[in-house]
Image (cartoon, rainbow, N blue to C red; front, top):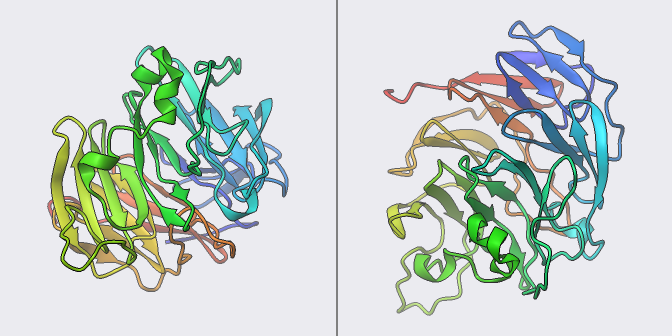
Length: 328
């Protein structure tokens, strides 16, 4: 199904059976009928993240320094980030909900390599204190549904994509936890550039690697190039590791599966790496990783919470793709 739109789509989120474009202020019902829900936020921002409750959102410039925190359509406050290489990598920002119910914002407001956590509404900083940056370009942030861990799929100078996981409970007690190496890197033995990563649930993390590695030919890493794997935080090990014959691009998880967005959408079984369905007629950006001097915008897409369909922005509108059920 193609939903025709009056303007280009810069963000998508499902709210019940309705699709909402937070940046542009539009919404579409199940029949594709468009309505305006607020005036929109102009050309200075082009992407959005939404809090678990749906109340708050952040609209931002993917390759800029501008962002706004919203309560519904109301602007709560403005955000910014360091201009250092801001045009070369994605704005680091996400929203989450802590175990005590507080909705929080995680971003890098002062330095590109220092993560901070704040209460969304008040802006109260929860990670104030002495910090020591470690020269990592934090990007593509996401918080587990239970609010206990933060994923960072950023990069370091080569440039080279990496993945990190941080304990947010620990960071609330000692903010310097966010300046360490996290809970994943050494144990996971990843020796390839990380292209993308996302949470499957509170415990499981999906990681996709690209072609580049730094190993000698006689070394055998636990997780090498062109792989798709599932890591368990509680088990401290890989549950699944499989070679894949495609570039993963951007990953979106739902229902124990992931959608890979690179050139076309692909529905992927994370236990085997097999492509369960794909749509070659639906063209999406060939975006890899969080950085690039030539900016290829991140695909705009939303997987329905029940895992039944994928909405993705395309030329002229939104393609809504029904997904096969988990039983085939």
